[in-house]
Length: 423
Image 1 (cartoon, helix red, strand yellow):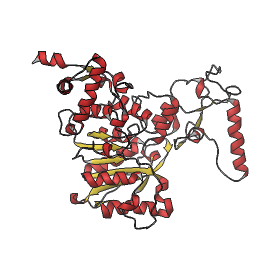
Image 2 (cartoon, helix red, strand yellow; image 1 turned 135 degrees about the vertical axis):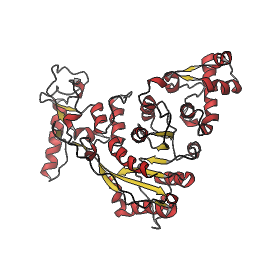
Image 3 (cartoon, rainbow, N blue to C red; image 1 turned 90 degrees about the horizontal axis):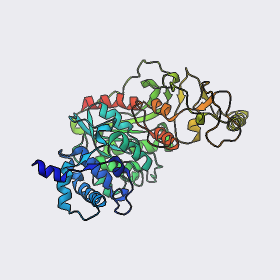
Image 4 (cartoon, one colour; image 1 turned 45 degrees about the vertical axis):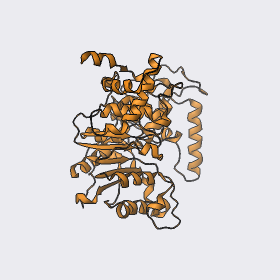
């Protein structure tokens, strides 16, 4: 038996999974090959692995052919995949639970904020989707799985296994077109919520946990949220308590970030009451997440840029507006970290530890001597509750975008804990 294993045993590297193999299309996101392969390896030997097996074997066959330089039969690949070794698996910061107490799927996964929360409670993720390529890279680096692509495509939906317990989705809020004002399932067509609702309808998980921007509550004078709740309650038959606005600041991170949480439970479970978690009594401030060591001069603003921000703020002040940059004190609470320039400009900080003011990037003017700098990506990660062992394998621009788009993990975890307890 050992001779057979030795014959087929192959080690798969991180570089092969992430690398673009144009010639064979090994990592072609259109066919979800790398996603199926990594999901299969994580679920190998469990009931869910059958969903990913065929695509995973196809992918592995192409990988072996690329590596060996000659044709490899599908039969060989099917046997070999049983013994394949993923050398990077032991280095993954957040490996899956071997003996999970529940299973969940992670839609619009971003970099895995929902997964961190639910996995820490004993769950196992059995399906992930995310379309952004840089976010996929970060997700893979930390969890060892490549997310599937566009969840609006039927091909992607076909990989979702049956029998999972919780559906998680921080779905983007697209404008609804509900001309008929019926507020039913059909009124959500063309929106990403429709795809979430469709998956709930097909798979009937015990529970779901949806997250969105605070503005969803008042979008289209409240009709958008009313439509969403009507679909979840009336069309899909779930018990859905009134959504709640949750502030990350109340759950141990120094960031003023309000988001709407929507949870629901399948009717046959008999659940008719749910209370969102109470805020913790923990007192937090920016100094709790501030870099311990001095940071690169590249994070410090130039004198010209700082002058531009000052002029911009003064123009708005003259009109009675409160727009403009803001410097957060060490004992203060950060504004919400969001994508775009103002996400960083409203979260500038004082840091007088810089000694060498020589620029390392092309700037206009010189580095300011007031000690004003941007927060670092790691500080943003901490503001969202990501532990320091969470790896950031992308450039700063992508990292800011990813953490700005993510969820505040402690707030998600506190709510998820209550959901899991009930199911």
